Image (cartoon, rainbow, N blue to C red; front, side, top):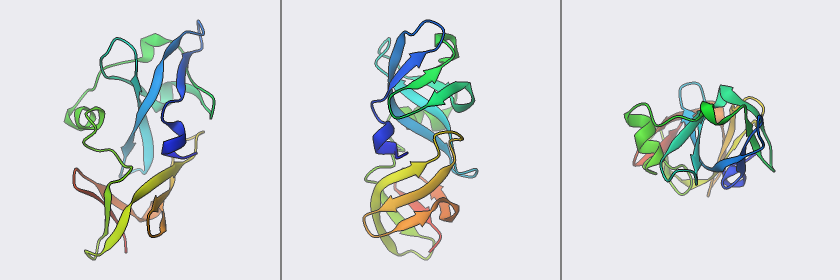
Length: 144
């Protein structure tokens, strides 16, 4: 699945079939190259996250969470930056670790069962997730 496809997907409670909101962003642990949390928008007008491990399903039609009790606010500066949009992937400049431009992030592909990143699609090339080095407020860095 792609980040762009996940955006806007309804997030549902398995316990009572209530819609808790919609996927706004995905938080990635760059070192492990894995989605670790989902930013949910549309409920209570504040940033809410749910840990990846609390999901019972992530599909093209819905993301399913055990219940609304799994939702929490941002826990640290990185999560605050993510929910503020300071670490959005799409459109972010991509540089190689050699200092060469590699375009901009067009999309990010991930496994919807595990949350593992599989590739970073840029306007110039597609990079395997194993080449991801860093994500910052200015750019994404990949091994060249």
